[in-house]
Amino acid sequence: MKLSRRSFLKLTGTAAAASFLVGSGMKGVAEAAEPVRVHYGREVPTICTFCGVGCGIICHVQNGVIINAEGDPDHPINEGSLCSKGSSIYNVSYIYDSKGRPKPNPNRLTKPLYRAPGSSTWEEKSWEWMYDTIAQRIKDTRDKYFTGKDENGVTVNRTDAIAWLGSAFCTNEENYLFNKMARTLGIVNIDHCARL
Ligand code: SF4
Image 1 (cartoon, rainbow, N blue to C red):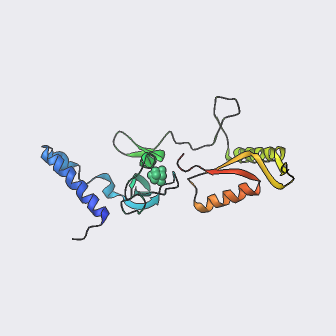
Image 2: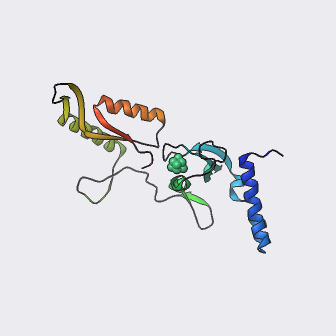
Image 3: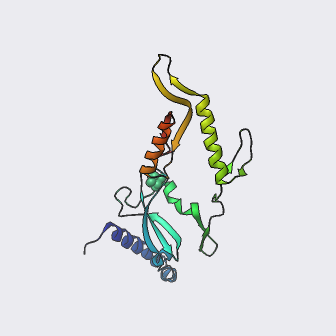
């Protein structure tokens, strides 16, 4: 019989769990534990967005709700394993209630929060306010600290007063565009958050 890596992991995992439960006199528990919740979910492969490694994840979806997320054993990068960030990705959006049913995580941020300079409190703001404020501050800072020529008279057209940090939640193409935009503004301090 030809076994894929995924089938092998499923088979050995199920066999090991069953033999432990039966061997420890917990046959009723073994029967009750099978089938597990994810058997009813539709498998949807995706990519972890926490960092640039790009590990494969399988989401189990039931009635339009993700009920589980775990490493994809068939993915060539991670072969089923996930680091602590990837392992917790499900809980960013959902948590389980006392009966094991998924419900939206109440700690998930759904609105922009702003903390003014020197303040210790966060205020809810609209996206429009956030975009306008960010754009205005970028313009003000760039105008104030723009360098056309360096001390040797060489044209540099840059600002050292702004740093730009890309996001691992974005695709390569989005980060490419961010990079273009930052350089258009004369920003030279550009980095990416992978592994932070
Ligand atoms: S955060 Fe972890 S699981 Fe996610 S892509 Fe990076 S290494 Fe993989």
